[in-house]
Image (tube, rainbow, N blue to C red; front, side):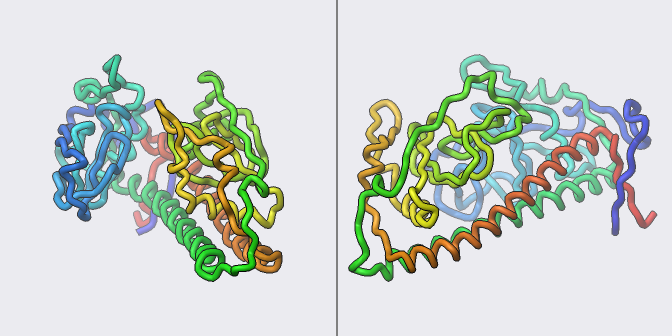
Length: 362
């Protein structure tokens, strides 16, 4: 079955066959159930907290497919599980009334800005009655399924590219281990990391400098934390957490802002770039923590790490091979951004009927 798209020229009216309803008429939210980390037995079922998967357990509470919504802490975060799952007590899980499509409602809920509906002052919280009172446009089931199919197709392509990138980086990491750990030569030189890198800290951003649809990513110790319209760097760099979250190591490319909770590492020659990157990923940086109130890594301690430098022929060969892998990763990331932009632009238009999904066989 093929689908096409049509523009609803008068998008201020309710599309034919659709109806306006309160969310509480078609959906019910249930509390998750407490499950301490110490009580979890490792199994195949994901355990969901308010911000996504927080572990795995050998038992499930809810049969898939299911929608999980952050109730306390990270309010309004919407997740979808395609396998049976265990939502803990900081979440709601959703059950649909009548004959509606769970995948359509997953995408619908993501457009309702539930994260802006905090009803508590101390600990963020999401009130069920406030969610139930929201008005939505509900298409017939056939169109719900068609809309979900289009959006799921985009998400599946995005997920495939993410998994390809994980596989590609694992290949490069395996090569690093083989060449520079398992088959390391005794005559290779050992130096301090500080001899082959330049290191600095990122720069903080004021709250009003974060822009929801900004031009450039803001990167922190855990990866992307927002967007802004300014950038600090426009070159490949390695960065890791300086304060707060320690141990994650990333590569930034293009125009980015690196926050003040990061350390920025730039090898003195391009050929050392991936050598330093994989060395840092395996260096257990969290063990360099010297913070008393919160985790902290000092630049001086990072510089004192010992690293082995191979001969020029070996390092050049490694860099050339791995650079090809990361060029493919970079291309995939560009494809991911394009697909995400397409999905995010299409999502609200599909949900309000401005763009309709038509069955081409009809």
